[in-house]
Length: 61
Image 1 (spheres, rainbow, N blue to C red):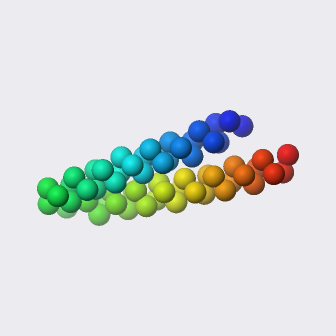
Image 2 (cartoon, rainbow, N blue to C red):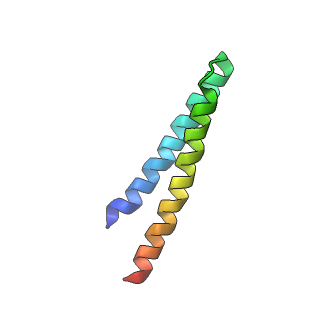
């Protein structure tokens, strides 16, 4: 199940993109900056959740 490890890093990339977007929108004064920051927090949570789930899945084998 190699794809479980890859998808966790996709969430990490998504976190970086969302942080960049939130920062640029915050500097421009756009009202959507908190939404992008929320997506960044969710992506970071999903990264750590996937990592933990992947380790748990490997330990059962």
